[in-house]
Image (spheres, rainbow, N blue to C red):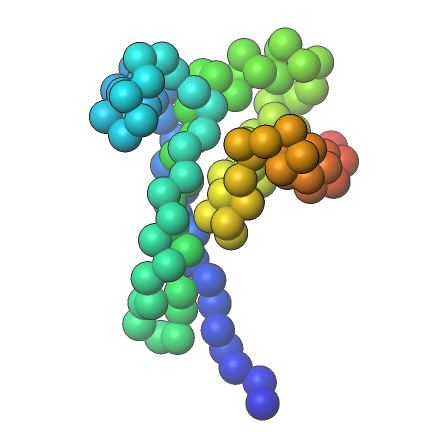
Length: 113
């Protein structure tokens, strides 16, 4: 049987101030960050699943790109991949889990020129 099931992820681009405020509200961290994911796993009309929302701080992405010597597009791909992985249930709270996520992120970044 073939189904037309789609998964929806929403994205929001923020700047430092808004991301710092969000990070404080959600995690009680008084600093900015590059990406925050909000899993939802909510069914939507038309046979779609709403996986969640990813909020990206474009200011931090730019700084990360400069620090790591990659393009803005490559770093944006990395943080979006990181956010999606969290929505899919991946965690990075141990060195082993972080290494697994980083390997997947690296594979995504290699596809971005």
